Length: 497
Image (cartoon, rainbow, N blue to C red; front, side):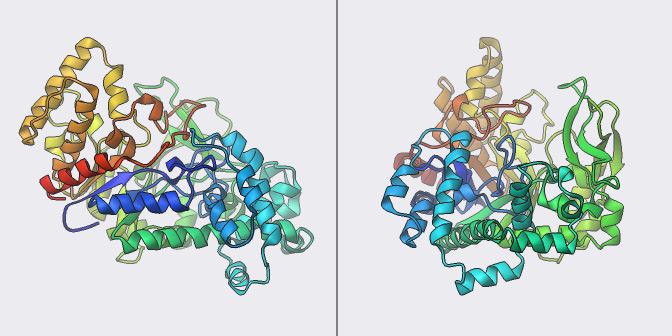
Protein backbone atom coordinates (compact mmCIF):
# COMPACT_ATOMS: atom_id res chain seq x y z
CA UNK A 1 0.00 0.00 0.00
CA UNK A 2 0.90 3.66 -0.12
CA UNK A 3 3.26 4.78 2.65
CA UNK A 4 1.16 7.95 2.87
CA UNK A 5 -2.49 8.18 3.87
CA UNK A 6 -4.94 7.43 1.07
CA UNK A 7 -8.56 6.55 0.40
CA UNK A 8 -10.44 4.15 -1.83
CA UNK A 9 -13.98 3.34 -2.93
CA UNK A 10 -15.45 -0.17 -3.00
CA UNK A 11 -17.72 -0.81 -5.98
CA UNK A 12 -17.75 -4.06 -7.91
CA UNK A 13 -17.77 -3.97 -11.72
CA UNK A 14 -21.19 -5.63 -11.75
CA UNK A 15 -22.59 -2.65 -9.80
CA UNK A 16 -21.66 -0.03 -12.40
CA UNK A 17 -24.54 1.53 -14.36
CA UNK A 18 -25.27 0.97 -18.04
CA UNK A 19 -27.82 -0.28 -20.54
CA UNK A 20 -26.87 -3.95 -20.73
CA UNK A 21 -28.09 -5.44 -17.46
CA UNK A 22 -24.79 -5.48 -15.59
CA UNK A 23 -21.72 -3.27 -15.24
CA UNK A 24 -19.01 -3.78 -17.85
CA UNK A 25 -15.52 -2.56 -18.75
CA UNK A 26 -17.01 0.07 -21.05
CA UNK A 27 -17.54 3.82 -20.98
CA UNK A 28 -19.35 3.93 -17.62
CA UNK A 29 -16.36 2.23 -15.96
CA UNK A 30 -14.03 4.85 -17.41
CA UNK A 31 -16.31 7.65 -16.28
CA UNK A 32 -16.36 6.10 -12.81
CA UNK A 33 -12.57 5.98 -12.45
CA UNK A 34 -12.33 9.56 -13.77
CA UNK A 35 -14.75 10.66 -11.09
CA UNK A 36 -12.65 8.89 -8.46
CA UNK A 37 -9.49 10.55 -9.71
CA UNK A 38 -11.06 14.00 -9.79
CA UNK A 39 -12.00 13.56 -6.12
CA UNK A 40 -8.50 12.57 -5.00
CA UNK A 41 -9.36 8.89 -4.45
CA UNK A 42 -6.33 6.65 -5.03
CA UNK A 43 -7.85 3.15 -4.91
CA UNK A 44 -10.74 1.35 -6.57
CA UNK A 45 -11.64 -1.89 -4.77
CA UNK A 46 -13.64 -4.60 -6.51
CA UNK A 47 -14.81 -8.15 -5.78
CA UNK A 48 -13.40 -11.18 -7.64
CA UNK A 49 -13.64 -10.75 -11.43
CA UNK A 50 -14.23 -14.45 -12.01
CA UNK A 51 -17.01 -16.10 -13.97
CA UNK A 52 -19.70 -16.80 -11.40
CA UNK A 53 -21.35 -20.17 -10.98
CA UNK A 54 -24.43 -21.44 -9.15
CA UNK A 55 -25.78 -18.73 -6.85
CA UNK A 56 -24.09 -15.93 -8.84
CA UNK A 57 -21.45 -15.40 -6.15
CA UNK A 58 -18.08 -14.04 -7.26
CA UNK A 59 -16.65 -16.17 -4.44
CA UNK A 60 -17.65 -19.40 -6.22
CA UNK A 61 -16.42 -19.87 -9.77
CA UNK A 62 -15.89 -22.47 -12.47
CA UNK A 63 -12.26 -21.33 -12.54
CA UNK A 64 -10.41 -19.17 -10.02
CA UNK A 65 -8.35 -17.44 -12.74
CA UNK A 66 -11.21 -16.88 -15.18
CA UNK A 67 -12.78 -13.60 -16.16
CA UNK A 68 -16.54 -13.04 -16.07
CA UNK A 69 -17.80 -12.88 -19.69
CA UNK A 70 -20.67 -10.64 -18.54
CA UNK A 71 -18.13 -7.85 -17.97
CA UNK A 72 -17.08 -7.82 -21.64
CA UNK A 73 -18.37 -4.53 -23.03
CA UNK A 74 -20.67 -5.12 -25.99
CA UNK A 75 -20.22 -1.62 -27.40
CA UNK A 76 -16.48 -2.26 -27.60
CA UNK A 77 -17.19 -5.47 -29.53
CA UNK A 78 -19.45 -3.49 -31.86
CA UNK A 79 -16.60 -1.03 -32.39
CA UNK A 80 -14.48 -3.97 -33.52
CA UNK A 81 -17.14 -4.89 -36.07
CA UNK A 82 -18.23 -8.00 -34.16
CA UNK A 83 -21.79 -6.87 -33.37
CA UNK A 84 -24.32 -4.84 -35.34
CA UNK A 85 -26.29 -1.88 -34.00
CA UNK A 86 -29.41 -4.01 -34.15
CA UNK A 87 -27.76 -6.72 -32.03
CA UNK A 88 -26.61 -4.10 -29.54
CA UNK A 89 -30.15 -2.72 -29.18
CA UNK A 90 -31.52 -6.24 -28.70
CA UNK A 91 -28.95 -6.91 -25.93
CA UNK A 92 -30.16 -4.04 -23.72
CA UNK A 93 -31.54 -5.16 -20.37
CA UNK A 94 -31.91 -1.79 -18.65
CA UNK A 95 -30.39 -0.10 -15.62
CA UNK A 96 -32.07 -1.97 -12.77
CA UNK A 97 -30.52 -4.48 -10.41
CA UNK A 98 -28.68 -7.36 -12.03
CA UNK A 99 -30.99 -10.12 -13.27
CA UNK A 100 -28.62 -13.08 -13.61
CA UNK A 101 -31.31 -15.32 -15.05
CA UNK A 102 -31.97 -12.91 -17.90
CA UNK A 103 -28.25 -12.50 -18.49
CA UNK A 104 -27.68 -16.24 -18.64
CA UNK A 105 -30.51 -16.67 -21.12
CA UNK A 106 -29.39 -13.91 -23.47
CA UNK A 107 -25.77 -12.78 -23.05
CA UNK A 108 -23.99 -15.90 -24.26
CA UNK A 109 -26.08 -15.88 -27.45
CA UNK A 110 -24.88 -12.32 -28.13
CA UNK A 111 -21.27 -13.26 -27.40
CA UNK A 112 -21.51 -16.26 -29.75
CA UNK A 113 -22.68 -13.90 -32.51
CA UNK A 114 -19.60 -11.75 -31.89
CA UNK A 115 -17.41 -14.86 -31.95
CA UNK A 116 -18.91 -15.90 -35.30
CA UNK A 117 -17.51 -12.69 -36.85
CA UNK A 118 -14.16 -12.89 -35.05
CA UNK A 119 -11.01 -13.76 -36.99
CA UNK A 120 -9.67 -16.81 -35.17
CA UNK A 121 -6.43 -16.57 -37.14
CA UNK A 122 -5.68 -13.19 -35.58
CA UNK A 123 -2.05 -13.33 -34.45
CA UNK A 124 -2.72 -11.90 -30.99
CA UNK A 125 -5.54 -14.37 -30.40
CA UNK A 126 -3.42 -17.32 -31.55
CA UNK A 127 -0.64 -16.20 -29.20
CA UNK A 128 -3.16 -16.00 -26.34
CA UNK A 129 -4.42 -19.54 -27.01
CA UNK A 130 -0.90 -20.93 -27.31
CA UNK A 131 0.14 -19.22 -24.06
CA UNK A 132 -2.14 -21.60 -22.17
CA UNK A 133 -3.55 -18.77 -20.05
CA UNK A 134 -7.14 -20.05 -20.45
CA UNK A 135 -6.43 -23.68 -21.37
CA UNK A 136 -7.90 -25.43 -18.31
CA UNK A 137 -10.91 -23.10 -18.34
CA UNK A 138 -11.61 -23.61 -22.05
CA UNK A 139 -11.30 -27.39 -21.81
CA UNK A 140 -13.51 -27.47 -18.71
CA UNK A 141 -16.25 -25.33 -20.27
CA UNK A 142 -16.11 -27.37 -23.49
CA UNK A 143 -16.52 -30.59 -21.52
CA UNK A 144 -19.38 -28.97 -19.59
CA UNK A 145 -21.14 -28.40 -22.91
CA UNK A 146 -20.41 -31.92 -24.15
CA UNK A 147 -21.77 -33.53 -20.97
CA UNK A 148 -24.87 -31.34 -20.70
CA UNK A 149 -23.68 -29.24 -17.80
CA UNK A 150 -23.07 -32.20 -15.48
CA UNK A 151 -20.54 -31.99 -12.65
CA UNK A 152 -17.11 -33.17 -13.80
CA UNK A 153 -17.35 -36.17 -11.44
CA UNK A 154 -20.08 -37.54 -13.78
CA UNK A 155 -18.08 -37.17 -17.00
CA UNK A 156 -16.65 -40.12 -18.91
CA UNK A 157 -13.66 -41.52 -17.08
CA UNK A 158 -11.09 -40.54 -19.74
CA UNK A 159 -12.25 -36.90 -19.65
CA UNK A 160 -12.66 -36.87 -15.88
CA UNK A 161 -9.06 -37.99 -15.48
CA UNK A 162 -7.82 -35.75 -18.31
CA UNK A 163 -6.28 -38.47 -20.45
CA UNK A 164 -4.20 -36.97 -23.23
CA UNK A 165 -6.29 -38.38 -26.08
CA UNK A 166 -9.51 -37.18 -24.47
CA UNK A 167 -8.15 -33.64 -24.08
CA UNK A 168 -7.09 -33.59 -27.73
CA UNK A 169 -10.60 -34.65 -28.78
CA UNK A 170 -12.05 -31.69 -26.86
CA UNK A 171 -9.71 -29.36 -28.76
CA UNK A 172 -10.37 -30.86 -32.20
CA UNK A 173 -13.77 -32.58 -32.39
CA UNK A 174 -15.26 -29.72 -30.36
CA UNK A 175 -12.81 -27.09 -31.57
CA UNK A 176 -15.43 -24.42 -32.25
CA UNK A 177 -16.72 -24.65 -28.68
CA UNK A 178 -13.20 -24.77 -27.25
CA UNK A 179 -12.15 -21.64 -29.13
CA UNK A 180 -15.35 -19.80 -28.15
CA UNK A 181 -14.33 -20.02 -24.49
CA UNK A 182 -10.80 -18.99 -25.40
CA UNK A 183 -12.28 -16.01 -27.27
CA UNK A 184 -14.25 -14.90 -24.20
CA UNK A 185 -11.15 -14.93 -22.00
CA UNK A 186 -9.11 -13.18 -24.71
CA UNK A 187 -11.65 -10.35 -25.02
CA UNK A 188 -12.07 -10.14 -21.25
CA UNK A 189 -8.30 -9.82 -20.78
CA UNK A 190 -7.93 -7.19 -23.51
CA UNK A 191 -10.74 -5.05 -22.13
CA UNK A 192 -9.79 -5.42 -18.45
CA UNK A 193 -6.14 -4.49 -18.92
CA UNK A 194 -7.15 -1.53 -21.08
CA UNK A 195 -9.44 -0.31 -18.27
CA UNK A 196 -6.87 -1.00 -15.56
CA UNK A 197 -4.22 0.81 -17.59
CA UNK A 198 -6.53 3.79 -17.90
CA UNK A 199 -7.20 3.80 -14.15
CA UNK A 200 -3.48 3.56 -13.41
CA UNK A 201 -2.79 6.46 -15.77
CA UNK A 202 -5.12 8.59 -13.62
CA UNK A 203 -3.32 7.57 -10.43
CA UNK A 204 -5.92 4.97 -9.42
CA UNK A 205 -4.74 1.56 -8.19
CA UNK A 206 -7.06 -1.44 -8.25
CA UNK A 207 -7.57 -3.66 -5.19
CA UNK A 208 -8.74 -7.11 -6.24
CA UNK A 209 -10.11 -9.96 -4.17
CA UNK A 210 -9.22 -13.66 -3.92
CA UNK A 211 -11.37 -16.31 -2.20
CA UNK A 212 -9.39 -18.80 -0.11
CA UNK A 213 -11.29 -21.83 -1.39
CA UNK A 214 -12.37 -22.89 -4.87
CA UNK A 215 -15.58 -24.61 -5.96
CA UNK A 216 -15.57 -28.40 -6.26
CA UNK A 217 -17.08 -28.43 -9.75
CA UNK A 218 -14.35 -26.25 -11.21
CA UNK A 219 -11.47 -26.34 -13.64
CA UNK A 220 -9.19 -25.87 -10.62
CA UNK A 221 -10.10 -29.16 -8.93
CA UNK A 222 -10.48 -31.04 -12.22
CA UNK A 223 -7.03 -29.95 -13.43
CA UNK A 224 -5.23 -30.30 -10.07
CA UNK A 225 -6.95 -33.09 -8.08
CA UNK A 226 -3.76 -34.04 -6.20
CA UNK A 227 -3.84 -30.68 -4.38
CA UNK A 228 -7.20 -31.41 -2.72
CA UNK A 229 -8.48 -34.10 -0.36
CA UNK A 230 -10.29 -36.32 -2.85
CA UNK A 231 -10.83 -40.08 -3.13
CA UNK A 232 -9.73 -42.29 -6.01
CA UNK A 233 -12.83 -41.31 -8.03
CA UNK A 234 -12.12 -37.58 -7.44
CA UNK A 235 -14.97 -37.12 -4.97
CA UNK A 236 -14.29 -34.95 -1.89
CA UNK A 237 -13.17 -36.73 1.26
CA UNK A 238 -13.58 -33.57 3.35
CA UNK A 239 -15.14 -30.15 2.82
CA UNK A 240 -14.79 -26.70 4.33
CA UNK A 241 -17.02 -24.81 6.72
CA UNK A 242 -17.11 -23.25 10.17
CA UNK A 243 -18.04 -24.89 13.49
CA UNK A 244 -21.17 -24.24 15.57
CA UNK A 245 -21.14 -20.82 17.21
CA UNK A 246 -23.39 -18.13 18.63
CA UNK A 247 -24.96 -17.57 15.20
CA UNK A 248 -25.59 -21.23 14.28
CA UNK A 249 -26.05 -24.30 16.47
CA UNK A 250 -24.95 -26.57 13.61
CA UNK A 251 -22.21 -24.39 12.11
CA UNK A 252 -21.89 -23.62 8.41
CA UNK A 253 -21.32 -26.28 5.76
CA UNK A 254 -19.70 -24.51 2.80
CA UNK A 255 -18.99 -27.63 0.78
CA UNK A 256 -15.75 -26.48 -0.87
CA UNK A 257 -13.09 -29.20 -1.10
CA UNK A 258 -10.28 -28.61 1.38
CA UNK A 259 -6.65 -28.41 0.35
CA UNK A 260 -4.20 -31.22 0.93
CA UNK A 261 -1.62 -28.87 2.41
CA UNK A 262 0.97 -31.62 2.82
CA UNK A 263 0.80 -32.36 -0.92
CA UNK A 264 1.01 -28.64 -1.68
CA UNK A 265 4.08 -28.34 0.56
CA UNK A 266 5.79 -31.21 -1.25
CA UNK A 267 5.08 -29.36 -4.50
CA UNK A 268 6.62 -26.16 -3.10
CA UNK A 269 3.18 -24.47 -3.08
CA UNK A 270 3.59 -23.95 -6.84
CA UNK A 271 -0.17 -23.72 -7.50
CA UNK A 272 -0.59 -21.01 -4.89
CA UNK A 273 2.46 -19.14 -6.17
CA UNK A 274 1.01 -19.11 -9.68
CA UNK A 275 -2.43 -18.12 -8.42
CA UNK A 276 -1.12 -15.18 -6.38
CA UNK A 277 1.27 -14.15 -9.16
CA UNK A 278 -1.57 -14.08 -11.71
CA UNK A 279 -3.76 -12.13 -9.29
CA UNK A 280 -1.05 -9.53 -8.69
CA UNK A 281 -0.72 -9.19 -12.46
CA UNK A 282 -4.47 -8.64 -12.72
CA UNK A 283 -4.67 -6.18 -9.79
CA UNK A 284 -2.35 -3.71 -8.10
CA UNK A 285 -3.19 -4.94 -4.59
CA UNK A 286 -4.87 -8.16 -3.51
CA UNK A 287 -7.21 -8.88 -0.60
CA UNK A 288 -7.21 -12.56 0.39
CA UNK A 289 -10.54 -13.68 1.81
CA UNK A 290 -10.80 -15.92 4.92
CA UNK A 291 -7.12 -15.42 5.73
CA UNK A 292 -7.45 -17.32 8.99
CA UNK A 293 -7.66 -20.54 6.92
CA UNK A 294 -3.91 -20.36 6.29
CA UNK A 295 -3.33 -20.83 10.02
CA UNK A 296 -6.04 -23.37 10.80
CA UNK A 297 -9.09 -24.46 8.86
CA UNK A 298 -12.24 -26.37 9.78
CA UNK A 299 -12.59 -29.70 7.98
CA UNK A 300 -15.89 -31.60 7.81
CA UNK A 301 -16.30 -35.18 6.52
CA UNK A 302 -17.85 -35.21 3.06
CA UNK A 303 -21.49 -36.25 3.19
CA UNK A 304 -22.11 -34.80 6.66
CA UNK A 305 -25.44 -33.01 6.94
CA UNK A 306 -24.11 -30.33 9.31
CA UNK A 307 -20.76 -28.90 10.39
CA UNK A 308 -21.01 -30.34 13.92
CA UNK A 309 -18.67 -33.28 13.23
CA UNK A 310 -15.82 -31.20 11.82
CA UNK A 311 -12.32 -30.77 13.22
CA UNK A 312 -9.71 -28.02 13.13
CA UNK A 313 -6.61 -28.77 11.02
CA UNK A 314 -3.36 -26.90 10.60
CA UNK A 315 -2.83 -24.87 7.43
CA UNK A 316 0.54 -23.89 5.94
CA UNK A 317 0.85 -20.92 8.31
CA UNK A 318 3.62 -18.44 7.35
CA UNK A 319 5.59 -21.02 5.35
CA UNK A 320 3.51 -20.36 2.24
CA UNK A 321 4.10 -16.61 2.46
CA UNK A 322 7.84 -17.06 3.08
CA UNK A 323 8.00 -18.97 -0.19
CA UNK A 324 6.55 -16.05 -2.20
CA UNK A 325 8.75 -13.50 -3.98
CA UNK A 326 9.75 -10.80 -1.49
CA UNK A 327 7.71 -8.06 -3.17
CA UNK A 328 4.41 -10.01 -3.13
CA UNK A 329 3.42 -9.64 0.56
CA UNK A 330 3.82 -5.87 0.25
CA UNK A 331 0.79 -5.92 -2.06
CA UNK A 332 -1.49 -8.23 -0.06
CA UNK A 333 -4.25 -7.38 2.45
CA UNK A 334 -5.46 -10.08 4.85
CA UNK A 335 -9.19 -10.43 5.51
CA UNK A 336 -8.86 -11.14 9.23
CA UNK A 337 -12.49 -10.74 10.28
CA UNK A 338 -14.52 -13.08 12.45
CA UNK A 339 -13.47 -15.05 15.51
CA UNK A 340 -9.66 -15.06 15.68
CA UNK A 341 -7.21 -16.81 17.99
CA UNK A 342 -3.54 -16.51 18.90
CA UNK A 343 -2.49 -18.51 15.84
CA UNK A 344 -4.05 -16.00 13.44
CA UNK A 345 -2.56 -13.05 15.31
CA UNK A 346 0.84 -14.77 15.18
CA UNK A 347 0.46 -15.38 11.43
CA UNK A 348 -0.44 -11.72 10.84
CA UNK A 349 2.59 -10.65 12.88
CA UNK A 350 4.96 -13.00 11.06
CA UNK A 351 3.78 -11.98 7.60
CA UNK A 352 3.39 -8.28 8.44
CA UNK A 353 0.28 -8.13 6.26
CA UNK A 354 -2.23 -5.35 6.93
CA UNK A 355 -5.60 -6.60 8.18
CA UNK A 356 -9.08 -5.10 8.01
CA UNK A 357 -11.10 -2.95 10.39
CA UNK A 358 -14.83 -2.50 9.86
CA UNK A 359 -16.40 0.40 11.75
CA UNK A 360 -19.88 -1.15 11.80
CA UNK A 361 -18.38 -3.88 14.02
CA UNK A 362 -16.94 -1.37 16.48
CA UNK A 363 -19.86 -0.04 18.51
CA UNK A 364 -20.71 -2.92 20.82
CA UNK A 365 -19.73 -1.07 23.99
CA UNK A 366 -16.37 -2.84 24.32
CA UNK A 367 -13.72 -0.14 24.70
CA UNK A 368 -11.04 -2.57 23.47
CA UNK A 369 -12.89 -3.54 20.28
CA UNK A 370 -10.26 -3.28 17.49
CA UNK A 371 -12.94 -2.01 15.07
CA UNK A 372 -13.74 1.01 17.26
CA UNK A 373 -12.46 4.03 15.28
CA UNK A 374 -10.14 5.25 18.06
CA UNK A 375 -8.56 1.76 18.27
CA UNK A 376 -7.83 1.42 14.54
CA UNK A 377 -4.09 1.09 13.94
CA UNK A 378 -1.93 2.26 11.05
CA UNK A 379 -1.15 -1.10 9.41
CA UNK A 380 -4.66 -1.92 8.26
CA UNK A 381 -7.40 -1.00 5.80
CA UNK A 382 -10.34 0.73 7.50
CA UNK A 383 -13.83 0.25 6.07
CA UNK A 384 -17.21 1.61 7.09
CA UNK A 385 -18.59 -1.79 6.04
CA UNK A 386 -17.93 -4.57 3.53
CA UNK A 387 -19.93 -6.33 0.81
CA UNK A 388 -21.20 -8.75 3.49
CA UNK A 389 -22.56 -6.00 5.77
CA UNK A 390 -25.75 -4.07 5.73
CA UNK A 391 -25.13 -0.48 4.66
CA UNK A 392 -24.70 2.15 7.39
CA UNK A 393 -28.11 3.59 6.54
CA UNK A 394 -29.70 0.14 6.48
CA UNK A 395 -28.21 -0.72 9.87
CA UNK A 396 -29.32 2.55 11.48
CA UNK A 397 -32.87 2.08 10.19
CA UNK A 398 -32.98 -1.47 11.57
CA UNK A 399 -32.38 -0.36 15.17
CA UNK A 400 -35.08 -0.04 17.78
CA UNK A 401 -35.55 3.36 19.39
CA UNK A 402 -33.62 2.27 22.48
CA UNK A 403 -30.78 0.65 20.49
CA UNK A 404 -30.53 3.71 18.25
CA UNK A 405 -30.12 6.02 21.24
CA UNK A 406 -27.28 3.86 22.56
CA UNK A 407 -25.65 3.66 19.12
CA UNK A 408 -25.97 7.44 18.68
CA UNK A 409 -24.19 8.14 21.98
CA UNK A 410 -21.31 5.80 21.09
CA UNK A 411 -20.89 7.24 17.59
CA UNK A 412 -21.07 10.78 19.03
CA UNK A 413 -18.31 9.96 21.54
CA UNK A 414 -16.04 8.59 18.81
CA UNK A 415 -16.80 11.58 16.58
CA UNK A 416 -15.84 13.96 19.36
CA UNK A 417 -12.55 12.11 19.89
CA UNK A 418 -11.82 12.47 16.17
CA UNK A 419 -12.70 16.17 16.14
CA UNK A 420 -15.80 15.62 13.99
CA UNK A 421 -18.62 18.03 14.76
CA UNK A 422 -21.73 16.59 13.17
CA UNK A 423 -25.30 16.15 14.51
CA UNK A 424 -26.68 12.60 14.49
CA UNK A 425 -30.39 13.23 14.11
CA UNK A 426 -30.95 11.78 10.63
CA UNK A 427 -29.79 8.63 8.85
CA UNK A 428 -27.74 10.56 6.31
CA UNK A 429 -25.85 12.23 9.17
CA UNK A 430 -24.81 8.80 10.50
CA UNK A 431 -23.57 7.91 7.00
CA UNK A 432 -21.56 11.13 6.81
CA UNK A 433 -20.15 10.50 10.31
CA UNK A 434 -18.99 6.98 9.39
CA UNK A 435 -17.30 8.26 6.24
CA UNK A 436 -15.48 10.91 8.26
CA UNK A 437 -14.56 8.45 11.03
CA UNK A 438 -13.00 6.07 8.50
CA UNK A 439 -11.06 8.89 6.85
CA UNK A 440 -9.99 10.29 10.25
CA UNK A 441 -8.69 6.91 11.47
CA UNK A 442 -4.99 6.11 11.79
CA UNK A 443 -5.26 3.46 9.03
CA UNK A 444 -3.00 4.18 6.08
CA UNK A 445 -5.85 3.27 3.75
CA UNK A 446 -9.57 3.93 4.27
CA UNK A 447 -12.05 2.33 1.85
CA UNK A 448 -15.66 3.45 1.53
CA UNK A 449 -18.35 1.22 -0.02
CA UNK A 450 -20.10 3.31 -2.65
CA UNK A 451 -23.43 2.62 -0.90
CA UNK A 452 -22.24 4.37 2.28
CA UNK A 453 -20.82 7.23 0.26
CA UNK A 454 -24.29 7.70 -1.23
CA UNK A 455 -26.18 7.06 2.02
CA UNK A 456 -28.04 4.16 0.40
CA UNK A 457 -30.23 1.84 2.46
CA UNK A 458 -30.77 -1.88 2.90
CA UNK A 459 -32.12 -2.22 -0.63
CA UNK A 460 -28.55 -1.60 -1.83
CA UNK A 461 -26.93 -4.32 0.27
CA UNK A 462 -24.63 -6.49 -1.85
CA UNK A 463 -24.74 -9.76 0.09
CA UNK A 464 -26.49 -11.26 3.10
CA UNK A 465 -24.46 -14.32 4.20
CA UNK A 466 -26.69 -17.37 4.58
CA UNK A 467 -29.46 -15.94 2.36
CA UNK A 468 -29.98 -18.11 -0.72
CA UNK A 469 -31.57 -15.42 -2.90
CA UNK A 470 -31.30 -11.75 -3.67
CA UNK A 471 -27.54 -11.42 -3.37
CA UNK A 472 -24.96 -9.81 -5.69
CA UNK A 473 -27.67 -7.87 -7.55
CA UNK A 474 -27.00 -4.30 -6.36
CA UNK A 475 -26.39 -1.84 -9.17
CA UNK A 476 -26.01 1.91 -9.42
CA UNK A 477 -28.68 3.53 -11.58
CA UNK A 478 -26.20 6.31 -12.35
CA UNK A 479 -22.70 7.32 -11.31
CA UNK A 480 -22.22 8.99 -7.91
CA UNK A 481 -23.30 12.64 -8.27
CA UNK A 482 -20.54 15.23 -8.58
CA UNK A 483 -21.84 16.97 -5.44
CA UNK A 484 -21.17 13.79 -3.44
CA UNK A 485 -17.70 13.47 -4.93
CA UNK A 486 -16.90 17.14 -4.23
CA UNK A 487 -17.86 16.58 -0.60
CA UNK A 488 -15.60 13.53 -0.51
CA UNK A 489 -12.76 15.58 -2.00
CA UNK A 490 -13.11 18.14 0.79
CA UNK A 491 -13.10 15.37 3.42
CA UNK A 492 -9.96 13.84 1.94
CA UNK A 493 -8.16 17.15 2.27
CA UNK A 494 -9.39 17.69 5.83
CA UNK A 495 -8.17 14.26 6.97
CA UNK A 496 -4.91 14.28 5.03
CA UNK A 497 -5.72 11.68 2.44
